[in-house]
Length: 228
Image 1 (spheres, helix red, strand yellow):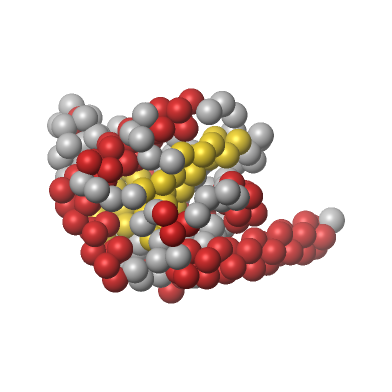
Image 2 (cartoon, one colour):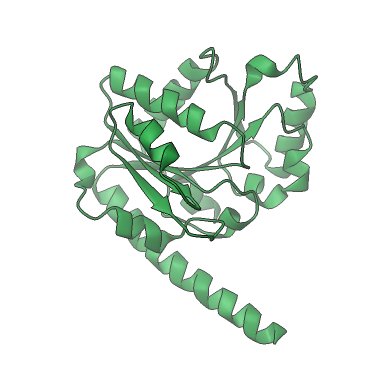
């Protein structure tokens, strides 16, 4: 039984990787920068993306978003208020998004109409680490309310990320969050990872985030593809 389970998992991941490769080619042909946002529930991922979409549109950019949740379209409706095209993906119990889901929910969109596509993954620090979605960049979010040791507890997801965003930095003092230790733990799991400190409430760190996005769009590197 164990052997069959392992073989089935390998088969599922192989199919996903093949579809992700096709998606990545489509994204690159369209000149579209795609970012996969992963985190645990309650990290503030939706608030972070909400502010990102709003500010990008105000600056004349053309972002879009796909939002993954087990159920409801609450986050998609919230993000759509930014004016950006947004689609909800309900996984109905699955703890991660898969490349096939992404492909299905792109139908009807002209990818050339966008310059950046954000994929908000299901809140989970385990399952999403194994599933390539064709993204160029994987962003792992860590909130100050979660503790500095999260990267050590869930090394695979942080090791597979290209960028780490520390959220809710305005609450760091109240949570007695040790920023230096958090940075140390992130670099221990993923040496050289780019780390940003942000607050979706105050806007702290968003200038640096937008500058990074601009440089990524200009260079359009497939960072995640190079690390898998």
